[in-house]
Structure formats: C-alpha cells, structure tokens
Image 1 (tube, rainbow, N blue to C red):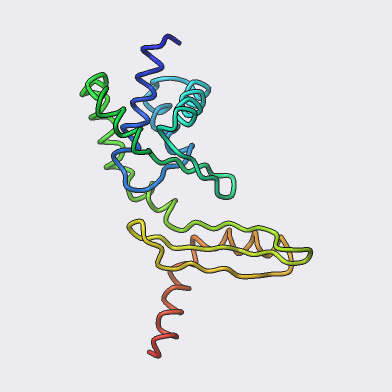
Image 2 (tube, rainbow, N blue to C red):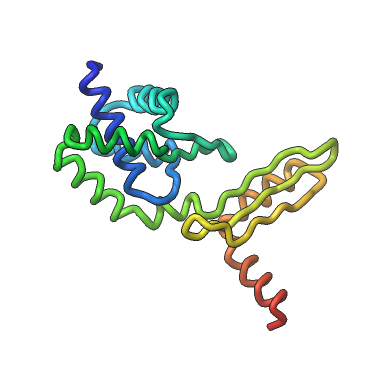
Length: 173
C-alpha cells in the first residue's frame, strides 16, 4: 500500500469520526470501508493503529468494543488535507452516516461494563448517554461474574425500562 493510499484511508477515518458527535466502534468504522470495497480489514487496522500513534484519534475499550473519537489534532490535520478526499467519497460517507446514524449512535448510548472489585464481588457499571451527557450512571455489585455479565448483556434492552421506573419511583408518581 503506497503512502498516498494510506493517507487517503487515514483521512477517510478522520472524516467519518468528524461527522458524528459520538464515538464509533472498530466494527462500525470497518463496516463502511469494507462495504464500499475501498480496502481490506488488515489495512484498516493498520490505519487505525497509525492514527492512534499519531494521537489523531483516541480509543476507549469497553467490554471488547474499541470506541474511537477524533482528537483536536486529528481535526486540524483533517482541515489541512480535507481536499485530498474526493467529493464522491465524502458523499458516500455522508449517505452511509445518514442511513445508519440511529443504529450507530444506539450502539454507544448504553455502555455497560463490569470489573472484579474483590474476591466474590463484581461491579456492573451501566450508563445511558444522551447527546454526550450521562443521564444514568449506575453501578450494581453482585457476587458472581456470570451475574455481572448477564446484567451488562441485558442493559441495552432494559435500560429505558429501568430509567422510567427510577424516574417515576423517585419522583413519587
């Protein structure tokens, strides 16, 4: 892969991340580029690694998902080299984001993770994030790793019910 091609893939990822106000997973970034046939999976992973090394993006790992965000220096770099991305590619990206925005954002709006506190105690840390603001930040302590995993796995589907219940209960309705 020559350096011009590598640069284009880096700029495409920076462009995608600059067009959303929430982090995207490795799978979400990879899906668009593979779907359009721009390059292969291994090249995308190399590009992500390079962007991280250059501090143009950051990554946060939550339960086997890597969540990527663009940094200020990534935005500045994108502004400098934006003209190297063809309008056709930008249009493809905009269309993809418009068609998939709800699903893309939905995946990262209910993060759930767990960790061991001490022997026989696991904490399930659950959140609901709306427009970059946490509206619930909840930690439940359980006695087994299996319970913590089950809580995290159920969080996405049950979080709105839990939120509704808490609000009505705490507001005395």
